[in-house]
Image 1 (tube, rainbow over the protein chains, first blue to last red):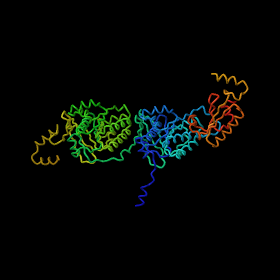
Image 2: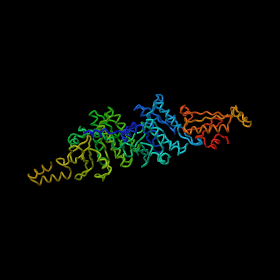
Image 3: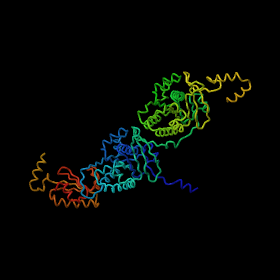
Image 4: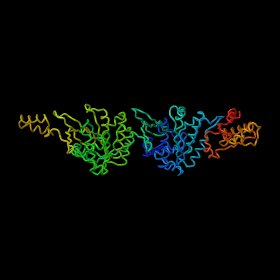
Length: 508
Length: 109
């Protein structure tokens, strides 16, 4: 007993939360407390913003004053630059919680006449830290020093600086250029920093994606992957691929699909609350109609629904749905139904994700519909889509929000569409709508391909859309169609009493 | 305007110790009694005595004692000698042991 207990209370590495969405997840709590972290990346990949957010969040969220030493940007420029992110640096400075200093390094006006060090910087840093009683420090970026001073001296001084920062009990971020820079070329990161994070801004398929990777984190577990991140008007947001799924709950509550016969197919009760549903099918098979019926039923139960339309404009969807007896307009007016319409090509994938996430946070819907997700596929490689959807599904699950995707698949590949397959393994309930040829008649059909954790019908049903709404009728029985009906009639004529009994049993 | 005229006038004349325009105003920033700093102090004293006798004013500033000046003078490297006048302002970093460079930097060669 005592052994397991001592194991449990193992030393936990103290961390300093960044307050940056996602980054604290992949670092499992933040940056190493009271130690320096090296933040590497090329120009324009977001080092300064990330570092600044670390400081500002420290002040606002954790009551930890901060010092920002800017080597590149002038202080007034920096204040203006980050204002667009909603940071009021001037106020923090007035409250004596923030200290911003520009350390100007010029190439020409330093004539070397002998041995020197950069103790001047230490003195200024010490003064700054004491002034605001800083717990967080940023040096952005150290590379600039190489323009003015001897690299050999600087290397020794940086080592001293990192040790000094540790002694000062501040959590520090030191930024530096990656690759051709002196700092990393000298292999400094390998021994001076306790944590090394690399930022990257890569263009693939003409879409720029920012990525973040933790190269090293002494004494702590961390996520190893490259995580996409974005910088938008609220700052830096990192997307961990799996972390959001950690606290998923599995509800046994049910929610109606809004189509009675469909509910019947799903164990008579509809979907699970908080589950994900995929409706795939070729063009014109009624995917949007099913989604709209679901949305309408949710709103009529006085719950909120977010409808993300990536193909048709909301007005068009409303007009079309009115024609099949689903009136969405009053639901929008009452504020229960919320439309998000965006052309996939307008933004990159991550921005879609974040826009949707933000609306979800604002409107707090019970149900989210994405129609169709296949339109997003034009946006990036399939693996990106999949990872984005995984994260979205995970996020929605933790929030106990039911999500319905529609996916258009191309004719001729109904059974096996690679993209479709990738997504279908991710969802809980998968329904397929398709045009089938039934006894020389083209008919819409619907079948439940899978539905996790519930008894569901394996039947292929005839799926009708009319001005009275959506209907699902059993194929077979009395509603036989076309040539089969004819064949049956013939059969009835030719046979006598006994086979009727056989037919009864066959039907069930 | 008048200042520069004065300077030019005095250059040709033999050094006038109290002449303001000619005077070298030097500031040496150091950090306590660290080796580089003490060496720099020795070096600058020697140079001043030899080349600027009677026409310089040397201020030695310990930024440990006056940290605020490190900021206002934008000090990073230490020791640093700043030639405030005659203009242009000049900065010489290091312990000033390379005399040739120091003299060049102070325009004394």
